[in-house]
Image (cartoon, rainbow, N blue to C red; front, side, top):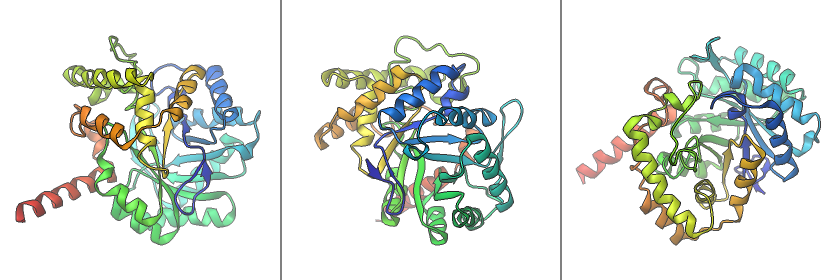
Length: 345
C-alpha cells in the first residue's frame, strides 16, 4: 500500500483501470469484466479508475454493478469527468465549467450507485475555463461530502501549481511508461515538490508493451489502437522491434514483457501507482504478479538503455488529441526552454 501524495488516500501499489472494459479496445464481456473487478478487489487492489465518458456511462454502471457485491469501503474510486463525446464516440472537447462539474458528479454518483467518489478529477484542461474555477467547484463538492479528494489529469506544471493553490491535489493521472517518459523532465519533479502523487496510465502503452503484438498486429475496426499513431504501419513495425528487445530482458527474469513494463514503473518511486487496464482475470493475475519483480537501479538503467526515451515511433495520441493535452504543451515549452538555455551556455 502507498499514500497518494501528501494529502491523498492510501491505495494499493497497482490500480485497475476500467476503460478497456467499455469498448475502447474492441468488444468486451461484461460478465468477465465484473469477475475481473471482483478478483482485483479480493486480491487487495483497492484503486479502481473510470471516466464518465467511458462507453458513454457504461463503465460507471458496470463498476456500480460490481461494487454491489463487495464492500464499498474496500475500494478507492477514481473518476474522470468532463469529456464531451458524440453519439458516434467522437471527441467534442471538454467542459470544465463549475455548473458542468456539479452536474457530471450527480450523474456519476447515480450510475455508480454510491454516495461519494474518493478522487474526482477533470479528464482534461478546459482552455475556456480557469483551472481555479474547475477545481474550486470540485472543492465545494468536497466540502459537501460528495467527493473525498481532488485529482487532475494530463496537465502541465504551471496548471498543477495553480490548481494546488486552490485546494490540495491528491494525484495527477498521466501517461508514464518505458516508452512515454515525458513527465520526467518537469512535471514529475513539480508533482513531488507539491506533494502530489502520480497515477500512471498507459504503462503498457495500450498493450504495445506486452506479447499482444508480437507476431500478430491485427486489430478490430472498433479498437482505439487501429487509429493510434504508434500502431500504424512502419511505426508499429519499429515499435514491435523495441518490444522484442524488452522481451529478451524479461525472459532473463522469468517474466512477461507486460510484467517487466509494470515493474519498471513501480521501481520509479512509491509515489507512482500504475493503473493497468486488465480486462480479464488472466490479465489481472499477470498484472498483480508484476509486484514480485524487484528491479535494482542497474536493472532499470539497462531497460532504459535498451529502449531509449526517444526510441518509440509515433505519438501516443492522434494529432488532434495531442493538441488538447495541457501536459504536452507544457512539456514542449520546457524542452524548448532547456534547449535555448543549452545553446546560450
